[in-house]
Image 1: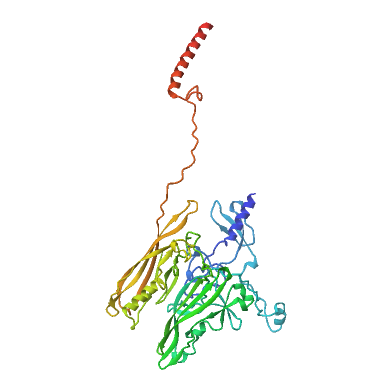
Image 2: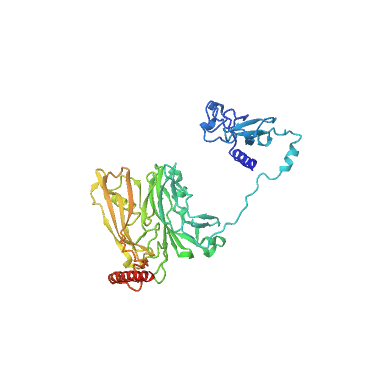
Length: 530
């Protein structure tokens, strides 16, 4: 039994890598010594470290910086005399000191002399390994869901039947350059801003695809449902647009350049996408310009049936669920997202989650104070100002009694762009809510909302930071806790006659008479016995 315990200790020590021998670790070539003249971190064989025990400085040794050794150990007190021809070492200190034999196991060494390869034996050596150097990857058929789920990329098919996704350009890098690799995600309405850069607008005005409206919708069809990838035709929906203008170079300007793209996707629950349309805002850009800011928005809206009802994604049923979007008469209430540089995007305000973020804007020389102020309002709100919020998470537009009006406090309109224009720089969305209903299944209900603006006088062409803050206040008024069932109170008997007599006063008097009578009877019995 003692020997078994010793062997277990040996396995544990070997599992930890055995003793470390420092810079003279026995490794012939120190493969981790990458910085001549300097001590490499955790390189326990680096002679530049000048350490007798690297473990006193390093938390671990990189593989290959210590010699691999196999130790077979026994407690030192079991050894009377050492006559083994193998190298030995002592690990630890009394009384748990171990006497270890270093096994000459060549398989543990990193450096083994390889066989010689020359022209005479090359063919025979390589014969067992012959075959294709590169093989084609297995082309597994992807499996698609029968319907889109929230967050899924929207699939598209080109005129050549190539499968792709609907793109929503997003900013990348410190300069917020547009990246076309970002997919639009189903049911997640959002807006992004990024910079399109061009080196020579004279040559690229009519050839740069990203400036052409047709690039965003022509010869592109959206799959109604992901499963439609296996069969085209009726399962695809073309992207339509009323805009037919193309970029054209006129003099020193490139006209009809895309500055804003707005996709509107109508969907019908699990039946998929019903229609997709896209609208554009076109701008005229000087040929001396090197960049243009593009805004891409994707909006998801439920279709309206003949009866007037619409398919709607709920944020609760009925009460709001934490983390789900707050509903407004314009769709999801939006929160400004912060991005690096002069770019702004949006994400839904999530119920019960306080947040604050922002972005920066800068006006132009052509802006007036009123137009710059209106632009600031629109950026803070993510579009047109919502007028009401849904009280519950499952409210539809037809249920007018279940909407609460938003209270606004706007800035006054005054100033000029040159001297200072009073614009809103902070929007504070204050939302009041409470739990209603049963204690066992409470439902979150909105009670009211107030949107307060903090205004500041700025020059239009200065870089201005806009911020949006949302806070949720719980006004739940909890009633008294439900009364519990009456408990059972146990009580010991208080007199001889319990439970036949419960009146305490009568019990006490009669008990006294009983004790006197019993005393007299005992005396009489004693007298008779005498």
